[in-house]
Image 1: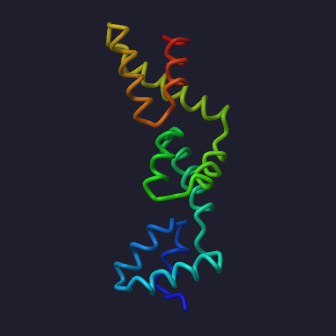
Image 2: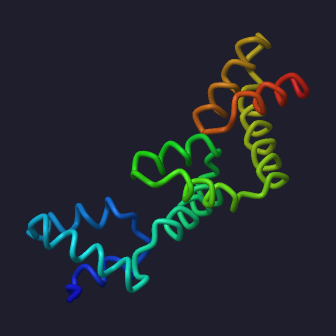
Length: 147
């Protein structure tokens, strides 16, 4: 029998297995009960790693404008399988992805107009985009083309 508290926790938003497992331990369940609850949640379709990966990827990209590298790192931290990570990253449209990166980079360049040294400006834009999780080769291509 699935407990009402954990049912509400899972239905409120998509959760990964590790979040639900930690919540069950916080609620005072022992290991066998935790595994039983997780199994029931998965069997009833309430908990799905694949759905979580897709929702997480889409949300972090659209709302926070994270790149694929950062999204992948965060999913790995949550112990999501490689298959589900690929499914989640597939939700990000390649053309729109580059447009968003271009917009972020252009905005950062505009902020750095007072920086006279082109190398320092390039380095700051590069670090900013890498920190946002965009791939090194795409960032270098953009910098070579635009600056």
